[in-house]
Image 1 (cartoon, rainbow, N blue to C red):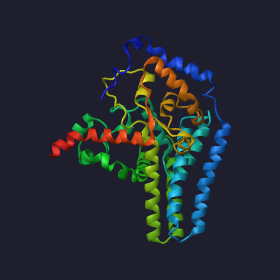
Image 2: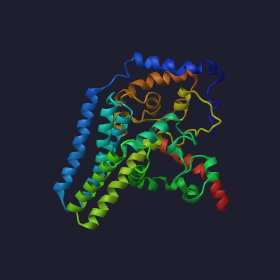
Image 3: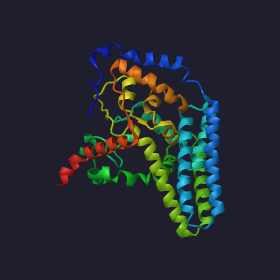
Image 4: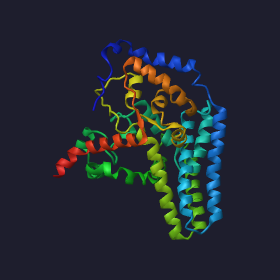
Length: 346
């Protein structure tokens, strides 16, 4: 699927300045300014949730009531991950050193996610969202995101491909574990900055995490706790990140789009009010986030009407829908991509 002719031809002559015009409006509205008060409160609440959940785990002890605690801990892990995301984009602090130190604590130590590896991966995603050759988030490792990938698929992706829409949510339960495995694998890359520090913090997380769980619970309950926690964590992350791009146009080398159109046409906003803002960490305003990655998440909802109006003036499609609708679009896209493989099986 390509989007090269989505915008009207008359806008082509001024494409080079379209983003600059929007950027001026956003800057004049003060939406790129830091929000230290907001982040102080948010970090305090997330830290309290994280520490409080572990405290509840210790107090409850050997009990089946630990399973709801595992679900709550998954929420805490996801919220810490969202804070690490904001740190990586420089939304919380202008200092790269401060952001990196805080990111290592939140990512590597608290939740077992390599901050350096994820930051590199996410930066490449932002540069080329939904581009089948350059965006690591749509690489055909397990799932397929385009007809071209389906035709060239091999191994696991080819086996799963025909039914990937039905298997998507079950596969999300493995995403938490997948991120941990990928984080450790990344430590073998010479290009990863601070590999020793990252590796030590990841190892400390795993030892503390497993040590705490097996110290409080007998092996059968401990294993079930780990399964529930990691499964819920993976699904939560999937519900946070996947609705924003999956099912939107997948770009190829033939698509020549300027920065504004590349970001807007491949992204989707998710409606839902303040509760959705909190649950998804502001990433439900994905269009605004991709246009202005360093904008504090608390300002994204204020940028939305400005961006939407500006896109309308240019004739650029601005996608927005509810959470269930976004999942429906993503799953229909996955099912359509797998169609050639289903025909082959017949």
